[in-house]
Picture 1 (cartoon, one colour):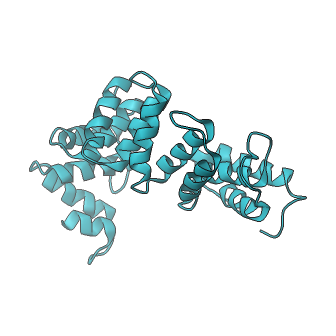
Picture 2: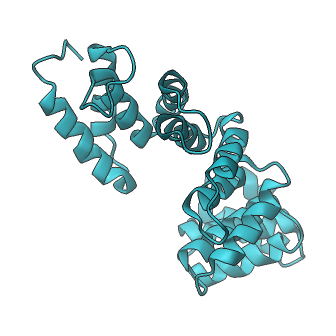
Length: 239
């Protein structure tokens, strides 16, 4: 409890190093939630030096006790080969364990695995089904992915209005890829995107928000948004 309070600054000064210290004390006594939290500290280098191997160690201790978020985190480690040898099959197994407990992020991960055929046979229908479970719980990346399924007709009946609805839900949570895709749909950026009624000002606003994203994971989308804005500068009203 003290670890959580220090971590979040609830009633105590925020101190990640102190939080990690309390997590370790509880983790060493076998408390699964503390083991998962300490794994997260090592994963992110928060309060302790970043260490993938130790992150995996503590995630595994918690995952073996059935902690869904630790199962999902360990699954990510296997998917990326981070702190242990890469294994898509093991990643899927762990994602499913967490997803079957209702963890929305893990449900989204299972959707990705089905959509990409990663660790199991590719199945767009199952991918869309798992994306929907996570999207209905407000997971932005799942909302984007479900919107993309509707856009492409992957695993369900193609529908551009429905695609736009789900993309908007993700975009409203600042999902940069969803902002770019919906923005390009609204400004009619090419025949593949002009599938919904045009709304140039709204589309330009979404593209501008994506272009301001500082997350390095979305560097490509930032460039894509800037390019789309330039292509449609003559049509755009004040953003």
